[in-house]
Length: 183
Image 1: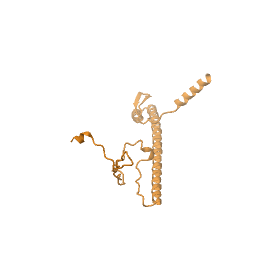
Image 2: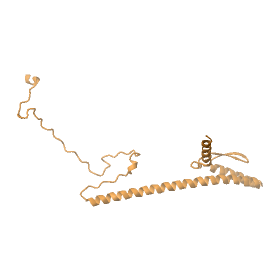
Image 3: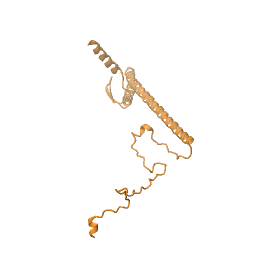
Image 4: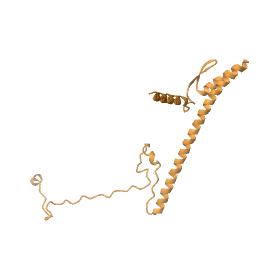
């Protein structure tokens, strides 16, 4: 029983040590500084502490000015770390998008090469602007006007001749209805 409690407490400590930096840029913090609480986003807190440091320096209090600058520096580091992570995520997403685009272009080039190698008697098929996985996510519907191929018409079917019930006698007279006979 004790071992399971220890593992749970270890997991709690691991989760508490992780700082969520995804939303730090717009997150509102409460900073308890020497002059009281300062509330705002990291950039607002940095500006406030730097203004307090200038005021303390102008009044001749170097110790208070240094204290305010240290508080400001903490939020500068926090903001820089969050910005670096955001930039790294953005670069990673851009790299993935570039790889996907290159893969799509290779597939299209291979499809064109296959169509050319099969012969020119078959019509060219325009590649779909959607990737194979994006079709379910798209709200676009393909219409006949959007395709490059001419629309093929079905041949009209003619009604088949009525077969008589008597296969031996094909020219059997048709039964006459009573209503039409009375006329």
